[in-house]
Length: 504
Image (tube, rainbow, N blue to C red; front, side):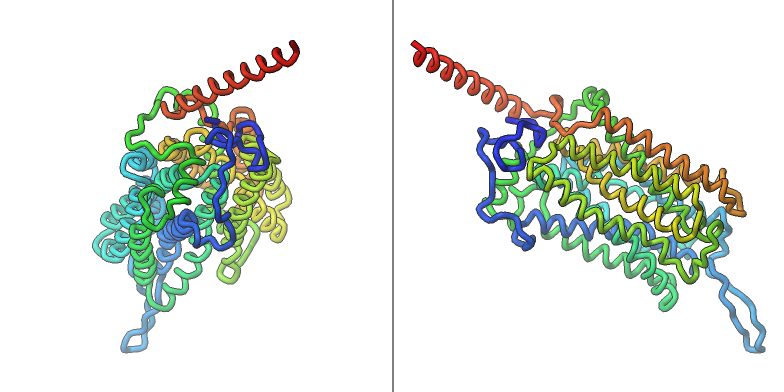
């Protein structure tokens, strides 16, 4: 049995040496634009909407809290005007509320990955989002009860959303053929940015027309409907899914090379001494540093430094994430296509996509820092954020290459480190940049992000791998490889004997 797509290029089937005695594995009905005929792409579609909920349930508060704390004019019976607000929270309290989610989110990354390998990634992913949706429905009640109760609900929401990224990797480990991993994962991850782009303006309209409570009720209800749909239609693996045809199930299992062991023992020492794994962590940390810096600080930069009127042009803040969502689907398809055509190996795809994106992001971050022009800065930031989509077709899928059975645990560990930028980056930016939004102070912020991108690029370039690691092979895989090697030696010996006989 070969390691993965990094194996020797044989035949036209993606430069991929088959997992079944070097015979090409193809489906009688090839994958076409009619994705609904393949159950694995129904899983992808539902995962897309799952991640849509992940981010819409996360970012809706950033809009709703404005309505919750705004001063509204009130005219009494005598015609006197005064102002009232639902919650008299000051800046520090609002900052605490907005950051409280991440304190819960960072706690359950590893736990989500570990449980996903035990009970099934579909259950972990579904319950993580479903429980968050139910808590979102309870948010107005908690906020009206007390600030402490509100904070507790937000932290618990973070706890349950923390299992989603590791959980979905447990799903891909059982559902994603090696030559389709990039597109399946990237299409699903695009839901994050679709949720961000749609939830932010929608939350504003809901709050203005129906009150801030409607923001939590609408998105909470959408999340509950999705949860029910997901649990009905998705199972841990294709062999357990009644909607998955026998042929598709066999194709997925044979291309992956295993059917998913019920009891998976994680080789912890090998995991924590694996340089390809550390390369993934470094890359994930670097990408998230730049992403969270802009996600949390872009509105302030546009308003305070570039003098944008965000009341009229607030949609500009969402444009980079819209571009990233579109490019994610493109980058995933392109990454798979390069492997299908045998142009690049898996390692080359991961390395070139990831490091190419990081180098471009480094350049455009530095251009933003130097030029500080309203129009050009928005263009450069949009390009920098958008190109992160190609990095996600590198590091974010790489866990499935090096250790598919342990991918959810690897993602859980890596995403724990990658959550740190969401907490630390805004603090550092707040320390560097004063209230006046000095452009030289912002220049330092962009330089730091560019430098971290560059460090992540260098580490990933030298240590990344797309090959199945020796420590990640199951006993069955090792036994099959030994049999194939023995068969090759036997065949070679036969050829040698035949050549000698012919010579004589």
